Image 1: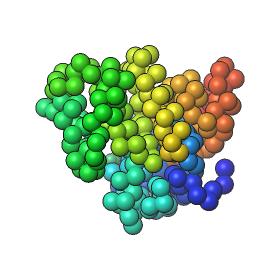
Image 2 (image 1 turned 120 degrees about the vertical axis):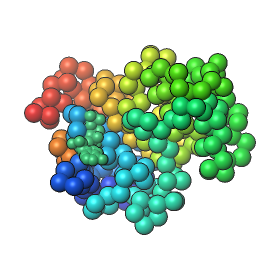
Image 3 (image 1 turned 90 degrees about the vertical axis):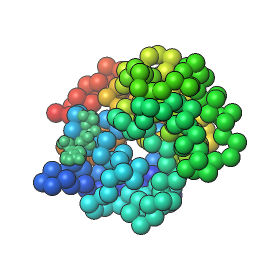
Image 4 (image 1 turned 60 degrees about the vertical axis):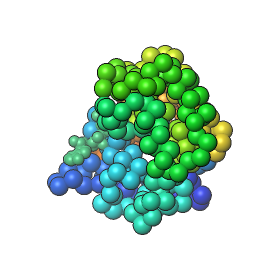
Length: 238
Ligand SMILES: Nc1ncnc2c1ncn2[C@@H]1O[C@H](COP(=O)(O)OP(=O)(O)OP(=O)(O)O)[C@@H](O)[C@H]1O
């Protein structure tokens, strides 16, 4: 896939180095408005690091990372504002309730009239009953579901979901699918990092495979579906 004019997520020649470790050596990705791209790859392939660069959490060592027209390096605030990010781990305050997380997010982004959408998302993710319970006692799956809700609250132009299905029950998976479909319908670009290839191909139109910090392929989701897709994926990992 070549560089596309107007891609909402535009990554080219991305490199991220931690000391002597090249977490990302060379990644190119373009996701257009209304598209969802899955990031697949083995443990340590560089998926989360790529997501963190786009979320403005980790600076790129070199290369380009642009979200919604904003370079993460030169326009960090505008870039962050355009992104909704579900990190692979962490991000929740144990002493705060889901509602307090949503309040904080809304305040930081100066959202108006966000409450009905927040309530709707909590219901959709079956978190309505625990909206006012501190997250310290949440199961892993509940924490994942809340992280997706927080990423989606402000209807961002760029939705970054890192391992959103990890430990999540089928109803939570359905709710996450609905969030991705809603984002695509309103013209957002979505990036989903996951090890669950069968779910990735259901919700994404394309799949990028990373290996050793390098993007080795970008193919249509159909290409990665079913038994044949499993074989194709294994071949790319070998
Ligand atoms: N802060 C850091 N300091 C040093 N090395 C790091 C750091 N973050 C990531 N790495 C290394 O970069 C490589 C890529 O890690 P990353 O978390 O991006 O992989 P991943 O594809 O998301 O893996 P997984 O599927 O296991 O979550 C790994 O070798 C990891 O050890």
